[in-house]
Image (cartoon, rainbow, N blue to C red; front, side):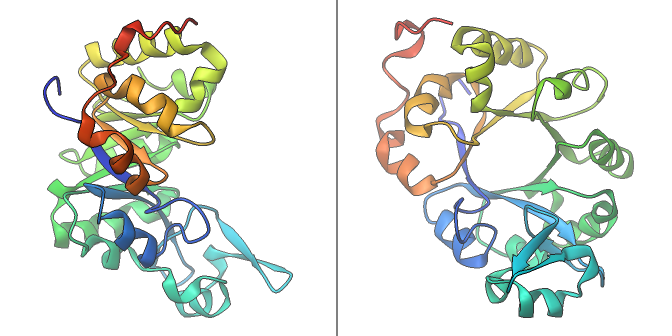
Length: 245
């Protein structure tokens, strides 16, 4: 970690209009070490990559749990490009981060992952009950907990055996840069891997300042991240960039 650059994972492949689709994942792995993707389950038990629990199409809202995979492919605006999880895991990537959105998806996902090699997958979820279920069902799996707000923090000491914390850069806007760095350092002292992700912050401004504290960056645009400063190494500003809390 002190001598190697953190891994780059494509956030939903490439975050934006085509996120969580095969074109997004294929573009991501050209520049990233792997991909992060969201996992949901359809009404007929298929695991699909989709962030929200439903989608709008033709003026109507459809819940994924109420559709078969074939119906989702037909109705969703990006339906033909939305893969099943098994299709994603066949990509040539060093690491996959499966963000599990539903408890019902855990056991089917573990069965799919067994076929591709569980050592290539880090599981994560913002829902403590999902994290707990994965830890219980697969004690040897690498399982992360995603922090999405202040309420998430109370769960960190309760979730015994987690491999990683997935921390949003956006927390800087709430606690300040100095406090954010201190939190990352405290988590690292506990031996927890740190994955950095982004909601609506400027990646190219913040990530160079935090690289030395994290193990992986879940980037909205891995091509831009890789080309912008990764070949140059860590930010020369480091801790002495003059930023306060």
